[in-house]
Image (cartoon, rainbow, N blue to C red):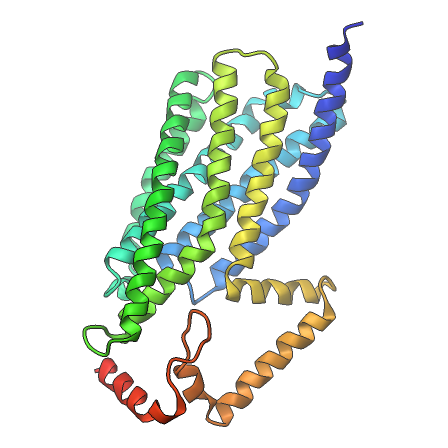
Length: 337
C-alpha cells in the first residue's frame, strides 16, 4: 500500500481540525470587531469604513472555511468539499477583498498624512464610495473567473504582493514623518492649530496600531500567491500546500482582527467589557479599569482637567511643569483662535 495514500488523509484531516478551531474563534471575534468599530465615534470615518469592510470580509471568509472544513468531517472526505463551486466562488471574493484592504489602508494613511491640517474635518463619504466601487468590481471579476483564469489570478497576486512590500516601506516613512511633525509642534506655538496637532497625534498612534495588521496582511497575500502558483504550474504536493496555506491564512486573519482590537485602546476597553459580561477575563483587571476610570473622574472634579490638557496624548508624559501652567493655557487659547 502506498504510504502517501495513507498519510495524506490523516495529514489533511489534522490540518482541517486545526483550521476549524481557528475559524471557530475567528468568526465571533470578527463579528465583535465589526460591531465595536461600527459603534465607535473616535475613529475617522474613512478609516472606520475600511476596518468595518475588512472585518466583514474576514467574517465571510471565515464562515466559508469553517463550512468547508466541517464538511470534510461530515462527508469523511479530505478534499471533496474543497471543490464545491458555490463556496469556492464566495470564498475567492472575500479573499481578494481582504487582501486588497491592506492597500486601501495605506492610501487612507497617505491622505491623512498629506492633508493633516484639514483631514479631521473631511468626513464626507467620497473616498469610501470611490474605493468600494473599485474594490468590489475587481473582487467580483476575480471571483467569477478564479477557476478559469488561473494566470490572471497569479499575476494579480504578484501585483498585490509587490505593491504590499513597497507600501510597507511607504507606511514606515509616513510613521516617521508624522511622529517627527508631531513632536515638532510640541515645541512651537505658531503655525499649527489644535486640529492639525490632534490629527498628527492620530497619525502616529494609528501608524503604530496598524503595523501588526499590515504584516499579517502581507503573510496572507504571500500564502495566496503561493497556492495559486502551485495550482497553475501543477506542482507536486498541491493538496498538502492547499490545506497548509488555508490554515495559515485563517490564522493570519484571526491575528488581524485581534491586533485591531488589542492595539486600539478604545476598542480594547470595549472588548474587555464584553468579555467580562460573559464571565471571560480577569476580575482583577476589571477592578483596575474601574479604579483608573474613577481616578480620572475624581481628577477632573478636582481640577485634573488641567493636568490632562498638559499631557502628551501619545504617551502620557507631562508637557509642562507647574510653574508654566498659565503660559501653557495661554498658548492653547491662541491656538483655538
